[in-house]
Image 1 (cartoon, rainbow, N blue to C red):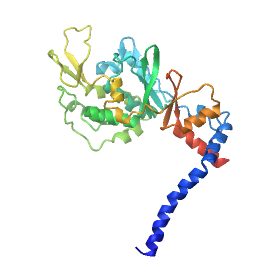
Image 2: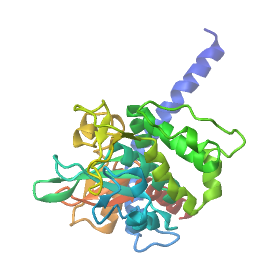
Image 3: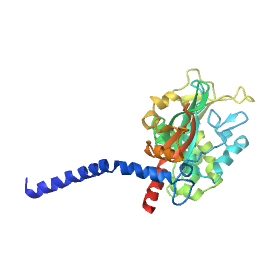
Image 4: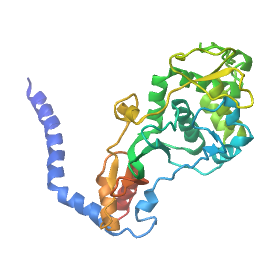
Length: 339
């Protein structure tokens, strides 16, 4: 090895060691910076940071009205009818949001279908900018116990990997709304996916959403999406049902009517801990809020936590609020530059 090679190698080794040494030497100063920056925080202002500034906003759609719940087994055309008008209004409001809460209630409850979790994670992301989903449940006498948080994009991906029909149904629903798809060629009469006719001249998914803005046209997507996941059988099907399909309740006014099925499953807490959602699930991105902390202590502890979002919990691990930790760190960095 030539002398120039040795010099190059020494240089490559020296830089990481220098960074490590600086980190060790300045660790107290770095801590003092965070403490000093947090100590100056009082209210939201250009040159200060607070958790109020970084508190994520929750989306609060009206899931239920009367005996219909859009998160559960409802026939596709009922999701968009007059009974679900309040849901449409809450989705179409111009307010942005960072996250929504999925409450699984007790271990035996059936609260959320995987198809509805996929649908509303997608819609709330597009319509309101939602980036995270917080999962809670009831444990003993305590409700809204924090289970963990998932990034919206990651959640959509694993839901689609677990049920590939979801992504196909979403793309077909948007393509039909955008005029790319022939409507009558995509309505499934059997649980077998259909190959639709596509018009390449119509806008693609991202372009269509930019065109929609706050348009009510986008709110027809739930029905279009669910139509592609639901299957109406003219004759009763014996138990057990086809794998991956759930039977919808019959219309009480038509007890002898056809059976309707949906390609979905119920979301369980076990899906989060050791099931298909587990690889992207983040139960550790939380912090039990110590009531004795000062505001500067709280900012410092959130800054030291993990994840882009940090859930603040009560001593009983009840979910209280979600902090956008990335926004907090960016604000702390801006304070350090400005000062």
